[in-house]
Image (cartoon, rainbow, N blue to C red; front, side):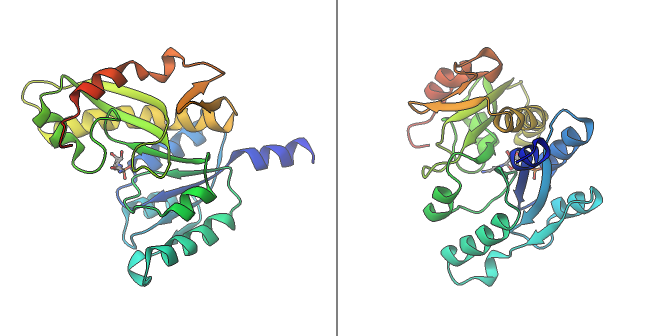
Length: 232
Ligand code: GAR
């Protein structure tokens, strides 16, 4: 295999979306500017009308819709998704606002190369409505996490986190916007680390170049733990 073929194998990405696609846009922009040496081979949406699809088309990326409503079971939906993804032979499968829960067979198939972004400082606030829940909890900080996907929803090893302060007068919307700015910064970076082969997982922790490093921003994890409501 020559150098070009090796690069091709190394840099392929498929992005799964369901909605607005601002994280997809951040990834597209990073590829375009050279900050992320990747080839986005396809954008696949679970929602036919997702604005993310238009963003992909504008960028000249092949798009596909796999509408979950057309499948009798989640397994059938997952299988169709897997067939479409595998046809692109990607190194990484990136969830960017993909709002379907994926089954275990899917997760196992892409283990170690399936990456998600979640709008909270995990393990605080897995699931939905993270911004409202963060406000309600009285947390002083909130943020976003990029993590490998495992069977535990929003529970996989964390690659990078970014924190923002919760400010007086914040609403879920103002807080979401502040967090989103950080999401757009950290997601392309995490994907780059992954494609560059710099990440490994040891004992449930993600290491960058063999150690947990400050640029992973993981210092808020302990704070996040204590912010997690017991019922959360
Ligand atoms: C982002 O905030 C992302 O973190 C979140 O959905 C939003 C999608 O926005 N993802 C999840 O909640 C996954 N559980 P976008 O479509 O503009 O990227």
